[in-house]
Length: 200
Image 1 (cartoon, rainbow, N blue to C red):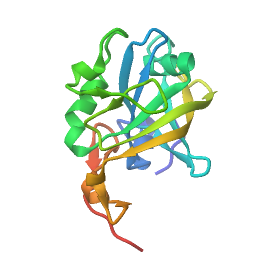
Image 2: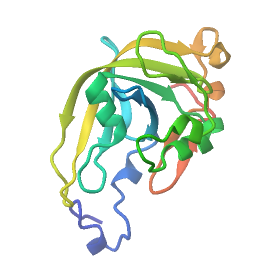
Image 3: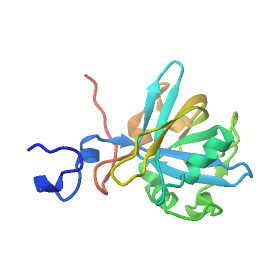
């Protein structure tokens, strides 16, 4: 089977399989604040590391209907700071709730039953319940070309300036994925948890 992007229906597919083929995708659970101090928390499934030295990570934020920037992106543009909290299997319900579309003044921490805690190097709070966090300062924003619907996404690249890890997810000084149980996005509406690992 072959088809060009955007023409999956002509190939007999009800949904575009693009995202279902690039998986699992880790979830960046991004906390930010606006210039007035209002806190925002939202999950992003286009999230990954870019380089180790310097430590750079990225996530991609789509635009809202009508082309407006999402609150997370607007906040980071205004303040230049954010925190990438590690989403886990145990926190999957809270992750889902924090991704609901709500007005900017709504506190997603409270909405999701989560506890904000101070960061060390940046203003946005961390998710206390998450086992690890990476405090970031904005490195650059990259606007991608618009899609067929006219909307486009923005890549957010952040330099990690502080890392927090709960000792409970460590084994012999190494992050143990069996203890961490990170949450990831698959295709369509499916998610996964990494519960095991092997070496090659």
